[in-house]
Length: 352
Ligand SMILES: NC(=O)c1ccc[n+]([C@@H]2O[C@H](COP(=O)([O-])OP(=O)(O)OC[C@H]3O[C@@H](n4cnc5c(N)ncnc54)[C@H](O)[C@@H]3O)[C@@H](O)[C@H]2O)c1
Ligand SMILES: CC(C)[C@H](C(=O)O)[C@@H](O)C(=O)O
Ligand SMILES: [Mg+2]
Image 1 (cartoon, rainbow, N blue to C red):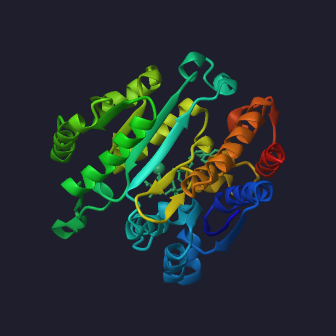
Image 2 (cartoon, rainbow, N blue to C red):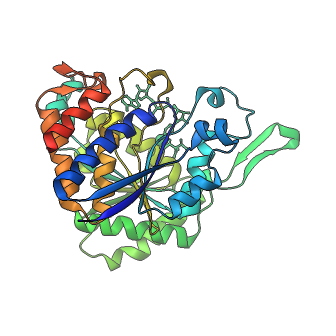
């Protein structure tokens, strides 16, 4: 029995709709297991820019810092996506949150569902048994290196910078994850071209002898993008930098069935943040079409992180049962199609 304060940053687009389903599910878990979750809401992203001028207002950051966990929807709006000259952007709110809180490790599990193999009609066997963990570095690399324009504005640069300390700590997370799973760890990089990747490889080679039970391997990111699609079963834990991890995790969502299924946890500090890997899908907002499962499974990862593993398992089991019954949102091309809210209700029902 516990009381938990959850900073709830629903954000933009479909963010509030999917967060609403996550809250319903967490409340049901609370009833079953005798916990009380308090959801404190705060603006972030385009919504926060509209309200305060900032994508991450000080009050939102302060709320996050004093909470037990952060439950995050999605941010982003076409108004900014279509304006390359905008200097204040929703994405800055998310990046600042990750950086300020020290959430350097982003865990993105990719699980295949046997009942969704119809989504890969040509090669259903590729989705069977898929079980990959992408460990993405989240507070360094190209996202945070020097940025800007020079030469009077006609040359733009984003610098990929990594220090030994940043690489070592994410590799520790990845080795530990591999030790708990299939004991295979693959560093995905561009070491044939990039100096930062060569530093990652150097440090990986130094650390590997400390984990003799783990099979370490290396792959270039362009090849990895292809191998993920033709032979996903070869992967267990993938560790990679911020930019490559962003791209590979969206790509691998196809192996699960939909981007709307993939959750994540961002950890490394005392407080963790839990969010679907997808964005605000502005075209789908307000239409009851978004798949809430990525967010609901992120809530399960939040419970795991709070030490409530049985409770997290109850959510995962309810999701599995619900998918197995053939219902789903439109992205899953299910036998019985339902909307966001109804799918949330069915998962709540399965927990009850
Ligand atoms: N973590 C985040 O908050 C985050 C992540 C990615 C993109 N974004 C932002 O979101 C905005 C839109 O970006 P985008 O269109 O490239 O990516 P997106 O993830 O929002 O949507 C891409 C496509 O994925 C599908 N999709 C996404 N979420 C879904 C869901 N829950 N259920 C069913 N289908 C879903 C839709 O077909 C959609 O067209 C941009 O402003 C971008 O910066 C935010
Ligand atoms: C919105 C954007 C900053 C973000 C990222 O690139 O990290 C998103 O794509 C994600 O994957 O969470
Ligand atoms: Mg992304």
